[in-house]
Image 1 (tube, one colour):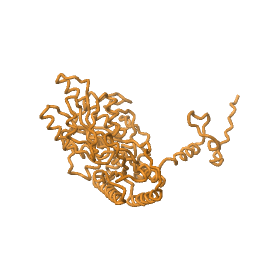
Image 2: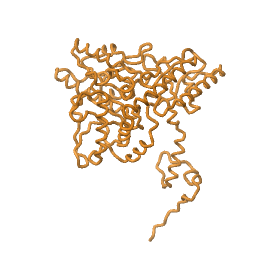
Image 3: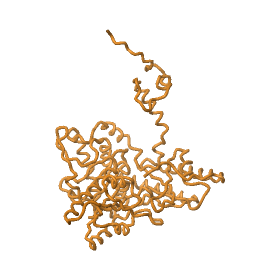
Image 4: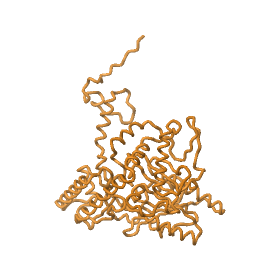
Length: 459
């Protein structure tokens, strides 16, 4: 007996907004019972996503929101490739290896035998985790050799670190020791960091491009402080550089700055390929100075899909598309292209920060001289807060965060702008016009009640 077909009123001939899914509520908690046409599903989701902010107007995020059409095409062609299947996708694995070697050379790693030691990651937060794990394992070996306890490791960092470092300390049972902010210093103080170190310190984290104000931390000075500590106390404490934002900026804008593997105490560096590597979200990198700086205990050799492979990332299955896109940028732009783009972005940041500082109620916290990121605060008490200004700019589509500075300076509220590839000088002028319009509006509202809290923006 033939099975009776269920009549489905939805057809391709039915006008799209007269179809069933559009004349009732969309499933939100339980999977719907019936299927729908592909175009219907697309349109429903597409329309909801229009409620998001426009990514190109998002001046809060460091993450790339623009790539060339050829890069997009390459991503689409490689979306189905799983990076971990190295035996099935050997050329994608080779491209990953080339990127690691290029970064190691860019950061002045000592000569390596065949290939540098490093890997791609899902963003640089995973790179931070891997760098921290390597430091803990190396410290444990040193402590055991001296007959010391290995139960109370600690890590020293500034209170301005990204939340991934707090997570690392929690997940891997490491005591975090924070150097607090002081007055107008919002980055790590090397002398204060050295004072927090002891025989149980697995390493010190230095940030190249703080998310709070865009400044570099003085890695060379920190290295000298730890050198003195080793001479007086005998503690050989390594440095991990969190170059999430600045690792692909400093080599091009500040080539003479000493922060990378030129300093022998720097053992590992991470960077976000999807920040100033100019790749869409989903790729980071971590590189070790030398092969011996990655403990062999953290490397797993597995027989997977018919091939032997070494793996030391936290994630297993990972997308290959963004890795190919990273290699595209390295080939397409070269050092000259990266330098031109970054110089243009810094010029725009310096112009914007200068113009904003001229407006009267604002005082710069940083001006965009390091990475193309700057922050400002109010010079005096006004009838509006920076949270109000953030809301007013949102009316024009701009997403400009207002937030409190880290521990010990939580009294200071700032706004910050990140200038990324795809943000033109013309857009900067449009933003300035909208800030001026907002100031005129606030001046016309003397009784405005100040907003004291902002969005859920987090670093």
